Image 1 (cartoon, rainbow, N blue to C red):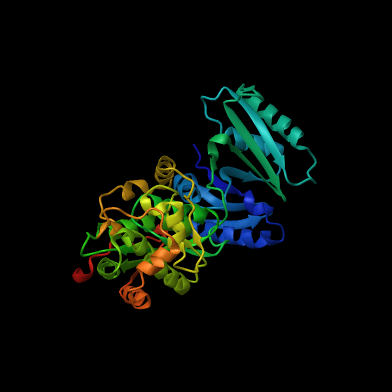
Image 2: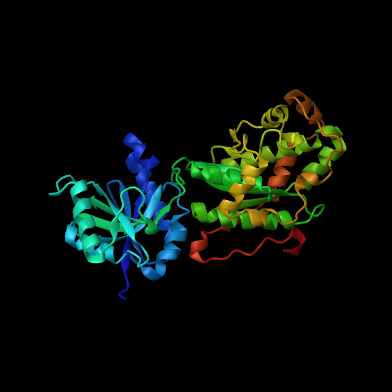
Length: 405
């Protein structure tokens, strides 16, 4: 049997609705596709309404499928055989794609080139008739075992089946909506929050806070591995590892116990805000969900946010834990997130945390702290990990505790 060479036909939906900005969004999407397919020696080009990836051999179909499934902005994609818009030729190509076990089929045509000497319905009838005559298969327009798709654009045509068509992740291409800084805890929620903002076109840098040596270093390793998974969705990542133990010790010594966790979080936002300025990020992203824990009551979220001027985005705010877990499994971070760790907020945690703090109460609780100096001291010890796209084959070692460097 001859080896087939396919063209990946990439369709997008939301990008096509962008009016005067459409060309910019399409160019960003094209660049993201090229980044995702790096190293595979494939030709990527753009025609009106579609992106084409040509010369895809059968041996590379699974690898291309896996990579394209992580390109935000794609509604769906299909592996098609490409030819001139000749219905007899297209029927012959379709025969190569129909499995032997299929008994019923239908043909669905989409004609982007209105200058062709046939309509979409005529193309369906002509190609369907030739397939039926050659194979003896029955046409079933309502519930076929297989659908053969025909697409016509410019002076080219493509044929594929529903078994060669796959969903994309949707959304907007990463980079179309600027950049954000995500607070990555190592747990289940924050990677999902980052992923959701990526889907809206924002590239994320990451910051992870640890309390080593007062807690173990497992959370930092987990955060790095989560960032590696997320890097596949956006083409690389930058992860800051920031020690928080010094800040926490000062809060323990000089602030009321019930506010400790909230003050930890205020300092995290302040430090993340400074790193966001360094990265050119326009917002902070957290994995907070309303009412999930004591620090995430409506009042506490408001009081903590008042520590910074930056916009704080909480993509999971109305999701429950079951929904977040299911999404974590889909994007590939769940198995990493459930590995054991000691969260930095567990260090010197209050026995009875405040659940309805006000900004004024937290400001008073911080009155004895040299806030700017504590922020600067933490930033001075921050470590930056540059995580490349996994498709470039450049492994980054796991971080090690500071005294082991």
